[in-house]
Image 1 (cartoon, rainbow, N blue to C red):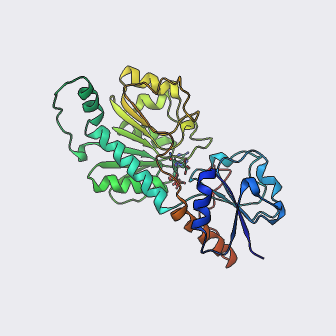
Image 2 (spheres, protein in one colour):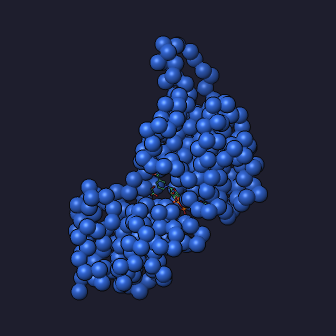
Image 3 (tube, rainbow, N blue to C red):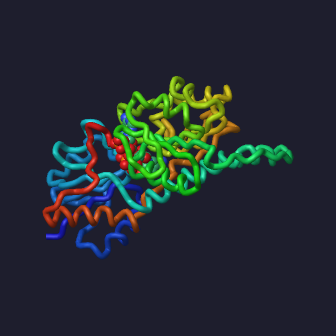
Length: 309
Ligand code: NAP
Ligand code: GLV
């Protein structure tokens, strides 16, 4: 009997998923037309309601549509014993690297200041800073952090990462663990967050950590809004401790219309689109894993729900 993959994501993308899986031996069902729940073998989900997955008694794997699995954290989300595979895909990684490089260059080349000057009709040259004199600190050195770091090294920036374990990445200084966070922050002119949201990273960007950055540093968030104390971030922008921020993710999404971030002159907002899962490329990761299971092999990129990523 043909296996069934249930897709619980946005409706617009469902036909794209069907097209992407067309050559693979599996039936795709949309969550609004799931049919017999005992017949569901796999579920590919984004932000399911609590208890939603419990109805599928024969579920073999939960695939996260996103790289982050914070939307599946909590005891009511994933049935006991069912593995969660997170999204790792070259297209998703490339998208995030573009977002990071774009925003690093925005601040590095003073495009934020020139934009403000243009609107004020002001012609004013600012001395260029050589890339190797600009220290980029990336929080997270996983799939996304390490790729963005390598792209910035290729542009000659001085790059360092912070992770839980030590990394050996060419031309990139590795900081790791809580003890090394202060030193890492103190030497990050542009701080980029590409961490997963876990108990340990919740509100990691706060008054205390922002205070450790060099005065006039920039902050780019492509991780999760939950990692930021937003009032502390606003205070740091208003006091001049931070010179600018590019924010893709927020504590509440969509960002409420009365949020002070919308109109803040030093803030650049994108609506959680730093990188997107695209069915044509991301389906390969899911096909590969289902095929591995059918061949009796182990799954790749299984998330640790306790650890949170
Ligand atoms: P990943 O491969 O799992 O990498 C996570 C990195 O974070 C690892 O280097 C890990 O350290 C580090 N880390 C985790 N907890 C830490 C802690 N407490 N202290 C220090 N370092 C810690 O994840 P990824 O694929 O790069 O994705 C990262 C995150 O990006 C996702 O979880 C998601 O939230 C976010 N994201 C956002 C968008 C967007 O559009 N805005 C798109 C995709 C992903 P170790 O290597 O030592 O384990
Ligand atoms: C998007 O936010 C993701 O986690 O992939």
